[in-house]
Length: 353
Image (cartoon, rainbow, N blue to C red):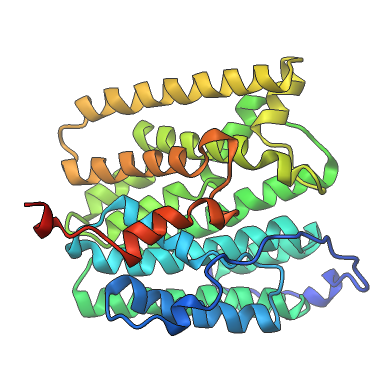
């Protein structure tokens, strides 16, 4: 990362801003995990995260979605094996940070504020955003706290420290992709479908999630991290599936307010088609991306099969989360029964034998 440079950020302050109002539903879990008595990996971690989110939402970041349990679900689908416990724990916290970042770009800040915020992430320097609202400083500090936890964990576990540089750069790329979308939305600009997908692969956050999970796993090495960071077709395809499935599940709610056009609106405008026709085109694209993933799995014999399985699981989880044109991440009640079974009343493998 480049060295921090002095910036007179007060010149960018925008006084008396009328903020957008986004009516996210509260968590269906309430304070359940603040009271649940268990020493399992999932419940102990969810208790800790839930407590922090409750404090955060009650003070300075009221616009953020409380989706801690749903965030853990994503990491659990990537791999349930005990050996990946560290990757799941940090990955869940990373997913929560990504959600905070997404809500800040999507439902709170102005473009001018977001430009400063993105610059601060690029330089990893909170001093650049001293003129911004307190909630944005809280979000940035939360990212920095997670970063310190990454460093401590990697040092203690003996993992490859190079993963830190990769994760930091991927996080900046994610923030920049959110900034691109914020500018599009502010300008009421609708890009072409292909332009949208190029940026959407990054804004899906899945390249970052895969990088973090694999980088904290048993196969982490420089060659593998270089491969992940080179935008291989299988990761781009999995990320595209996640982006497009997300769009079809969430675009109606998002378009109720000032919001960037999703892939659905991009298709409708570019090809002059109806909503259902856009759904069909995007669904066909998702099928094609699965074909690419299947083909790549056959060709990538030099990539460990557990790593490929993690990437495939990301695409599977995306389709499940947004199937039937529903957003189970934002509307947690749609995911609750599944989470009850996975976390609170799991089926023991030993009982099945």
